[in-house]
Image (tube, rainbow, N blue to C red; front, side, top):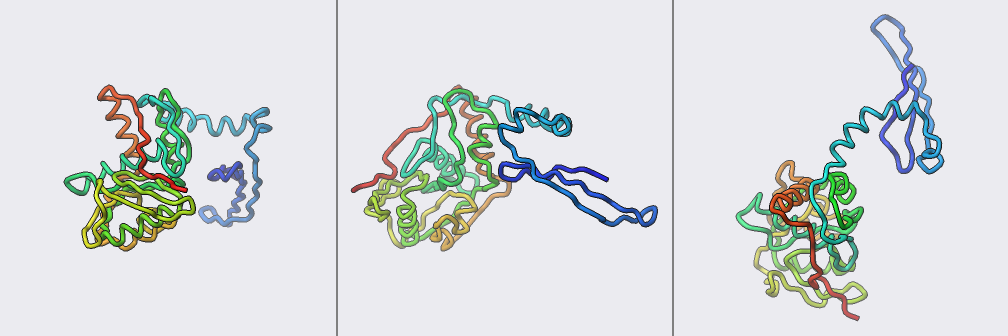
Amino acid sequence: MKSMIFKPLTGALLLATLTLFSCRQSSYHLERVEGKLITIDQTLDSAPDQRYINILKPYKTTVDSVMNRVIGVCDVTLKGSRPESLLSNLVADVLREAAVQVQDSPADMGLVNMGGLRNILTKGDITTGSVYEVLPFENSLCVVTLKGSDLKTLFEQIAAAKGEGVSGVRLRISADGKLLNATINNKPVEDEKLYTVATIDYLADGNDGMAALTQAQNRVCPEGATLRELFLSYVERQTQAGKKITARMEGRITVEP
C-alpha cells in the first residue's frame, strides 16, 4: 500500500492511497484506489497534520531557498488594470524589448493580456516568488509580423476588451469598446506595411479575443523564452545597474465618453 499527494487542486489537495496486489514475484496490478479531498483553508492552518508537514518539508526547504531570494526592489506598487496600468505597461515593455532575440531591434509593439497578470508587485523587495505569483503561466515570447490592415483589426479587438497591456502604440477607445484612433511609433498605421508585435504564444494562437494575431505573415517563438524568465532577467539587469523597478502611466490607452 502506498500513499501519494497529487498535484494541488483549487483550494485543495488530493491524498490518494494505492493498493497494489502481487500475483507473482515481479508482476503487479492495481487492485484499489482510495482518495479524499483535503480543503486548504484556515481550519487546516490552525491544526496542521504533522504527516503532511513531514512529507512536504524537504520540498518546501528547497523551494523556499529559491523563491525567497531577493532579486530587486520595486520603487512603487505595480498593479494591473484596464484600460492601462503600471504593471501591464512594464510587462508589455519587457516583451517588446525581448524581440531583439529574433530581430535586430525591439518590436514595433508589445502586447500582453491582463488575464495573464495574476498578482501585483508591491513596493519594496522583489523576490523570485513574487514574480512567479504575477506570471504563473508557462507563456513564451512570440514575435509575429502583421500587415497594417490586420494590426488595425488587432487594435479593434483590444478596444473591445476595454484595454490590454500595450507598448509602442497609442489607442483612443470609446467607453463601449470601439476603436476611435490608433498610432504606432507615433505614426498612423499603413495598411500594406508590415509591423512586428512581441506577445506571448497564448495570444499569438488567437486566444483572449486576439484572433487578428493568427493572420501573421511570419511568427517566431524562440525556445525557452518564457515571459516569466524574460521578466526575471529584466529585474536582475536593472538591479545590477543599480536601478529600481518602476513604470509610468503614459496614456497608451485612453477611454473617451
